[in-house]
Picture 1 (cartoon, rainbow, N blue to C red):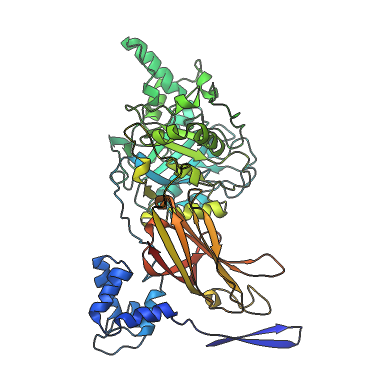
Picture 2 (cartoon, helix red, strand yellow; picture 1 turned 120 degrees about the vertical axis):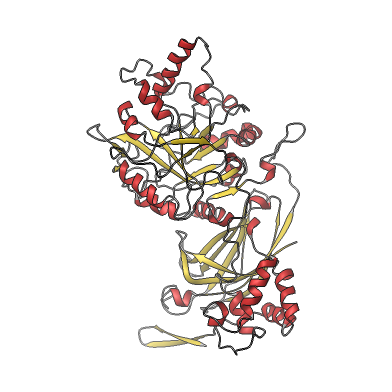
Amino acid sequence: MGSYKYKYCMCFTRKFRSPDAQPPPDVRAAYLSFNSDVHALRRFLSQAQAEHPADVDRIHALLTAASGGHGIARLVTRSPAPAMPTLDDFFAFLFSPELNPPIAHLVHQDMSAPFSHYFVFTGHNSYLTGNQLNSDSSDIPIIKALQRGVRVIELDMWPNSSKTNVDILHGGTLTAPVEMIRCLKSIKEYAFCASTYPLVITLEDHLTPDLQAKVAKFRPNERVPSPAALMKRIIISTKPPQEYKEFLKVKDKQNGSGNIADLPDTGSLRRIDSNADNQNGSGNLAADTGSLRRIDSNADESDGKDELDEQDEEDSDEDDPKFQQDTACEYRKLITIQAGKPKGHLRDALRVDPEKVRRLSLSETQLAKATTSHGAEVIRFTQNNILRVYPKGTRVNSSNYDPMIAWTHGAQMVAFNMQGHDKALRLMQGFFRGNGGCGYVKKPDFLLTTGPNGEVFDPKGSLPVKKTLKVKVYMGDGWRMDFSKTHFDTFSPPDFYTRVGIAGVKADTVMKKTRVIEDQWVPVWDEEFTFPLRVPELALLRIEVQEYDMSEKHDFGGQTCLPVWELNQGFRAVPLHDRKGNRYKSVRLLMRFDFV
């Protein structure tokens, strides 16, 4: 039992008692169900908690351990002989995020499928420290993104002021540049610090041919199609330079075939050695101008018609005196996931060619229009090709968009501003907590299959309820350890409530909340919520704690977002994070998840 004193009216003191965390009634009932029966304990772990048989053995050994320097044995004084856990032991286990997490921490999905069968944790303008107009460019945001498990890094390559080297910056703005070599060194050092699965670098190439030659230092090897085969590899996504296209024209005329139209758009996945030697200080990298003429985020957007840009400015330099065939060929060898700008109608851009793999880039606005008029074609395209979506140009404050429209249509690379700490980014972070946080999440089967009559999944259609998720919010603790006693309220302990809901297809999306518990550092709600789910495979469970304030905006008390398809059944300790996604040291909720 703790007590807290608060001063008010300058000279008066109020004293509040705050009880220590106590097992809620459901936990006591669960404990009594096995109490002194070792077989009943194993049955509880197997049935109520739905633990894997190997985990049942591990947890059972932990709860009945006689001694040792780990786990529950550190929490209480134990007798030398193995014994059944006490109620305090059992409660301490259930309320520990390390011992009883809400989702698995290991990669468990099949990682040998084609690359296009995965959602990939993707960044946008990964080098920017702040807004899109006048913030600094740096390698620090790149490092932070890689530490969070981001698997697609975007860099914009421009000649420096003397035209002798390569800078990274957001062109056409007041953003300060950073040297490309600095970004490359950081990428090389941190590429696989959080995930061993492949890192994709997409690049906007605004370089001259001689600087393209300076960039071309990767060593390509054999072609491989899956994330598992590309582990600890760096791969490049870009559009071939104009010089390479000219080289192909010359070569094609020499061969007399008269058929080069398909070559520049042919895509592949090729293994790239992330430990390739740096030469001339240029580092390891390649280029990317996107596939739909990678529109700068400050460029004009589509006029809304069912058409793409008719002419790519970069496609008009056929008589460029700087044309260098050898450089273009070396530069082309870097390209692993090839992007080519389609011209004409959107339907043509989305046409599927079984002999090719392409990467197409659309702004969030273009995607919204495409899914409205050609939703089925978008899904068919993403079954074998790669679709990248990026923020519209008006998001100068580095905010983000709702990723669900992209995910429900199969877009693999949903590019986000990782410095834009908003609700949308929390959804993104939560989504990629799935599959062990490796940065790759396997698409559900319904986005990869086509019906007998060519029909595909329709996220806007009338869908039946597949599963019902029951969520019970028991209690919370940890704020008293992680915050000062006056952080939430100067004159009294906090008044916490919890918001719980689903982010997913429109029919599944909802938010609910508990009642407010006044003047308690260890709030006990003991409330249950039910969520019918039409598409549980793409649903995210949103959890947010607020501190109620009658006169001002409610204070933030922590949040997390968890993939529904990954939730562990039964009692679980759910750690909370700050607005940026950093996990608090102690703040957690005791919850229960059941599927019916």
